[in-house]
Length: 481
Image 1 (cartoon, rainbow, N blue to C red):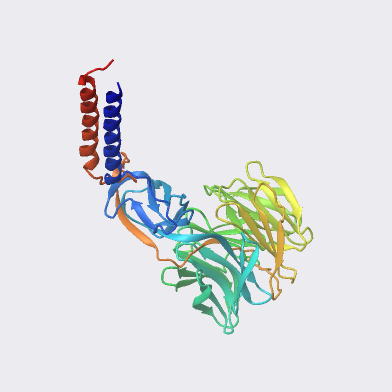
Image 2 (tube, helix red, strand yellow; image 1 turned 90 degrees about the horizontal axis):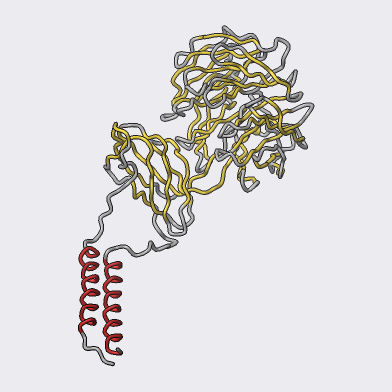
């Protein structure tokens, strides 16, 4: 009996050893969680053909790092690496054709760019840390907008010689271009981007007294055209927004909204909202572009315009209502009011009702919500340089207030605001080019055939054979009583 036990244990030990060897040599050992795991895209592989449709992008990175992913230069979201240094991001819809994916390590900070019109600067703040980052001097801006595709802030600015579009590098926060538009009589009003972020539009009063829109190519940072819009206007144009389809430019003026076709800026129609209003503010659209929202300082209403026929309804929010911002999922509409209410409001757009209202220490003017929908920031126009921070959680509670070191005020006659951004680290990006087939995704999307060692297929059967032979030998041994 003892002899059988010894032989059996020996065979089992040998089998276990062979199986362990097969795991190690076959490349099936657990992934090592190393802090210095390099940033890489592992799927799709360079030159791979995948199915059109949903696609999982996978890769490696330092443990717990955040990775920003762009497809053809446009942000597709962010992934977070596991403790094992692996990350995965689902792209819900990849069109047929050739594409390039770029990944880069990034911080989790969101920086907001506030136009400090009193100090003639752009003030940069960290929205998550509730801290002041820096001041970008000598940019007398009335508003700014952020181009995520090119990591560029575009500001509608006054200069010593007139007005200009100023392009600011979003990584270094330094001016990389200043594009003059007119002479000393020029007055900047507003600036916005089209949804594709290929073109910026700046609204300004020319030295002639007419109202113009300048069209800027954001790839080359050049002025493509300046177009006279003054004909249809009645009074004080201010807000400027491109519809979600990228086909129309909507301009807010004192009494209503004027609409122009893109790209030729031909006049479409005028929608009169309130002939006795004082309304210099922005326009925002719901997710599908079927409704446009804009406030009215005078009567405290927000107007909801049907974009198909320009009919509208309105509902009361509070006196001094001005700038608006949707959360990224469009489930909430935030609004700020200046004098006399000095408040932040949250509105449910499904029934156009106010679900929360919170007063602020000073009248807020600029407004932005982070692209992850977690934070809001507002700047006051009272001359103190106050900046309000809060969490987007169904309420408008101000959690913290800081002050720009040089003071000032963030009043803008445009009511424009800049969307905060994620700040990329300065590490080198990695890229992969691939092709999506026109056929529906058949499982190729995002998957890679692993090149595994043949050793497991050789050694594992040997291990099984060794176990079988061992038991057979043990069975044939003489039995001892």
